[in-house]
Amino acid sequence: MEQIKDTLKIILGQLESKSQAIPKNSIEGWLKNALTKKELRHIRIKYFKNGVLGLSVDSSSWLYALSLKKEEILMKLQKESGLVKNIALRIGEI
Image (cartoon, rainbow, N blue to C red):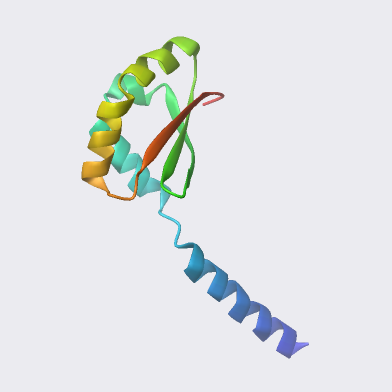
């Protein structure tokens, strides 16, 4: 039984090192520098995968407003971290 336990620890450790997920607080810091306080109240981070930052927006009017600023926001995020390649905005719960 100990061998299975040890094997699982090794495999899980390898999977964690491969994923190299960016801590959510880092992404929040990037967004704080790219968005206003008012805009931050209307979004939630949903995912960050393959360079795409998925954001949930609370209403269609905020989705439209942020879509107009998408390129500007993306440029600011890329200055913070070159890892962000695109932003995906969707209406959803925040």
